[in-house]
Structures are given as structure tokens and as C-alpha cells.
Length: 466
Image 1 (cartoon, rainbow, N blue to C red):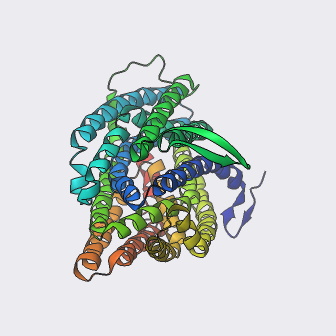
Image 2 (cartoon, rainbow, N blue to C red):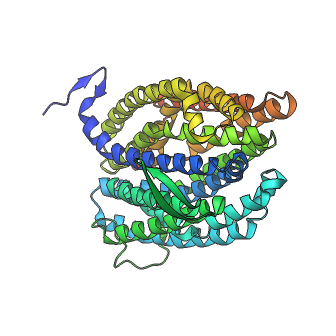
Image 3 (tube, helix red, strand yellow):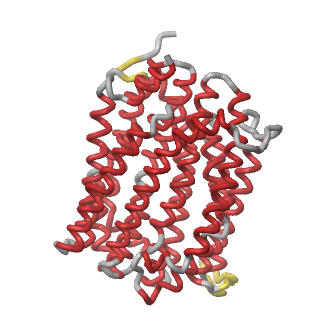
């Protein structure tokens, strides 16, 4: 049957792309909704509580993204094996995923708990909230082993096209988190529900209650994801030996290491970025934290499409179908531009209303609205770089994204933010202007590289097979 083409786009790929993308989008939508609820609940305790929770957010990204990098190496290998129809190899990779969970989860548990008192100090958190920020961070990382399991095993499942299981687990985790938030953050009280007065029990633990709720939810998610992988017909490690497998680990590490260095370097940049913002004071820290939370919802289409692009690119490489890679690239970029333009327009239009959900402080709302409207304009451009990077990860080409992201983060965002905030006193708006410049640079460089057949990592992936 002839495939339908219009405007150079392979429209027959749309059902496959969306079948992979929509569960990831829904999963991220649920995560973002819970993040919104968390931020609103903590925000009701005051600006100090919001700042205490948000002060270590970028350190959370640093750790989570480093673990995710291990998953990227596994994703490329599993997707390629699945595309080639080699289920035995996919199962062998799953056993190495178990080792990755055990090693990374144990390492980061020890590291984060040992450094929990120092992290708020390094992040230049206001001395009045350093203690509560440290205790929040400590509790959040007690279940690091199940958190690693959720991240890595979820990536393995997505690599074989199973995006629904991580979605279902994610929904369960979010529901557990919300229910426990209601019970642990607030004291016992009477609430009005449909005109009725309802007695609601509560612990009244405030910020620490939010941390405990998240820790329990992470544990539930890790256990469920582990069970799902164990029972999966393609990537179950059942029957495999739990020991290092050089034939699997070395190719995975060659892909994972540049991605890990990229994520570590960019996340470290986020830490430096946030530290400079924290030094601007409580209002800027709260506005930055809330604006980040709001913005995350509008990136959902981008990251959902990135998951589909990475999986399908890896499958196409395993099947040695270079034409499918080209068709996938043009199709997914068009979809991404449409979706991210729409999300950027909505963010620009409703920025003040979104900020008002999480804070009643007029200064925080005003400042957050300004930076959100600034970044909304760059959403479509950033979306293109997201999906192109996802395709590179899917075919195991992670060196180019590593170089581009590190140069952009440290050469543009961090140096620029230092000048804007510490030298010229442009405040939070100046810092976010540097972030936007970084995003635009990624778009420009990735677009130029992938437009050239000679330099394209996607083209070179097939040359490596010949």
C-alpha cells in the first residue's frame, strides 16, 4: 500500500508516533498536575516554605538526570535489539539494567544523605530556611533505590514501545502523593465540601509532610516498575545472570557516558544558575520556583514527542531502515512545531493566572509572569532541539548533544547570568533572558547539524553499521 505524503511528510507515521507519545504525555501531565498541587499546597504555608522546597530543586535535577543517562544508554541498545527482532539480547540488556539500578541507587543514597546538610549552604539558601530545606532534601532521598528503579526500568520499557506501563505507574505514584499530601502537610481541620462540613484528619507536618508524601510515593513507584519489568514478555531479566556483561555494558556505556556527562554538566549549570537566583532574595527565588513549575506543563508535548522519536529511531536503526529515519525526522519536527507553538501561545496568554494559582504575593506573581511570557516565545524553537536530540539518543549518538549542550549551558547561560545578575543587576528577568538565549542556540546548532548529511549523527549511525 502506498504511503501518503503531503508537504514532504510521511503521514502514515502519525498513528505510530502518537501511540508512543500520548502515554508519556499523559504521564508527564499527571506528574505536572501533582507538582502544581504540591507547589500550591506548600505555597499556602507562605513564601518561605515555597523557597525552602524550591531551593534544592536543581540538585534534584542533577541527580535524577545522571541516573536517567544510564537509562539512555540502555534505551539505545534495547530499541535497536527490539527493532532487529532479537528478544534474547533485549532480555540480556534488562539484566544489566538491574545492575545499573542497584549501583546508581545505592551510590546516590549514600551521597545525598551524607551531604544533605551542606546542599542548602552550597545553594546560597537564606540562613532562615537552611535547616528546613536540608531536612526536606534528606527525606526526599531516603528512597533513592526505588527512584532509580522507576527511572531506569521505565526507560527500558519505553525502548520496546511500552509507554503505557510507565504511564499507569506514574498515575498511581501521583495519586499516592496527592492523598498523602492532604494528610501530612495540614493539621486536622474541618473543610467545606459541596456545602457540607467534613472533618479531615492531618499530621500538620508542613514542608516535611510534603517530603514524606513524596518519599512514600517514590517507593511505591519503584516497586511497581520493578514488578512490571520482571513480568514483561520481552525485557524481563528473569533467568539472566546478575553479573556484568561486557558485550552489553561497553556499548551501553559508550552511549551513556557522553549523555551522563552532558546531564551532569548541564544540571551542575542549573545548580549554579539557581544559586545565583537564590542570591537575589526570597521573592526572586519563589518567583523562579513557581515559574519553573508552571513552565514544566507546557513542555509536555515536547518531551512526549522526544520519547516517541528516540524509540522509533532506535527501532529503525535496528531494522537498518535509513529512509524511515528521514521520514520520522521530518514528521516529528512538524508535529513538534505545531504543538509547542500552541503551548507557547497559551503560556504567554495565561501567565499571570497560572502564577496566581501558587502564590498570593503580588510581587512574586508580577515577576513570575514577566519571565514566563519571555520564555513562551522560545517554546517552538526549543521543541525542535528536544526531538532532534531524542532521535540522536535513540541511535546511540550522544557525543554531539553533549558538546552542544555543555557549550550552551556554560558559555551562554551561566556566564550570561553571572553578568546579568551579579554585575549589571538585571535580576531574574536577565537570568531568564540568558536561559532563552541558550535554548535558541540549541535550536540553531541542532538544526544546522542535522540539515547536513555529512555531519548528521543520524546518518553516521547507519554508516557505522556498514
